[in-house]
Length: 415
Image: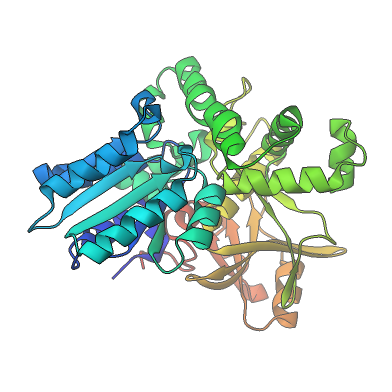
């Protein structure tokens, strides 16, 4: 049974691909998408090692991929080892190839006609380009899997960390597995995040996705989002801060592009049956805490900057839900507000995040939202010492540390 808290994690996605590659071939093309530096290439290489000489791995972003005949050569290599057990062709970073979906469709249709016993797995860092290409050209021929940012429990399992240490590491430095070995050298770690994650994602993947007419503005939008995690920001005010008056549609579009690149989610306001994306300002959620820590100032301290620390914890909790495949919104009806409204495999939850000194007060926003929307359960996420103090107000409580490990799990314990 798949653990919903790890639905898009490395181990779960690997197991799903292993199951699908054990099915009769040729089957549907497996399309693996996800952020940079979360282990997509490592996962494909692990699959290749399991298949031995029945596997062909090729990186579409390698220099030789631009040479004439490279594409055809990979398929010839795969066909030369096809048999029983079935061969598998693993094409990494396929979104870097021009017209990739049309060419892939032609080759996979040919495999089906010939009944060649071979599977095909492709990966890419750009959800928008892979999604559009696969939907338009590969309709009915593919299955999509997402390997998203690592949660705290995956860090604990993958690096033999105590759960408490994994949560602390996730909040302060994010969940990029390739960066873990650099944490003892902060300047080197920050350079890795900037040069291997942020710059390639914004300066390469996004520009491959579509035409960006104002790349400098795109970078500024990302910088503003990273400086204001888990804040509701008016697009009009955002344009004013960027000196881009009149560019509201452009800024809104760039926020959508950043979400497709797995960097920032502009979560909309909850409004009953429909999500109001245009009428209300978005809440900016940075999808990996490492993107917050990369600037020189780094992570705040709970005592030195409690308000900023609270924003970081709220951002981590909302990003955790987004990365677990939940639909995430927020709710606000002045003067009441709820930090996050989530819906998906975890159920329906209204979340309020409270950190710092003092016992949590009765959460009027949570109670009012759930009164108006009976299908949702209220959940207060707080520091460990305050768990249970809001139960008399009809609000379930959970420590934010446990939430980051297990998802919504009031009362504690593993599900």
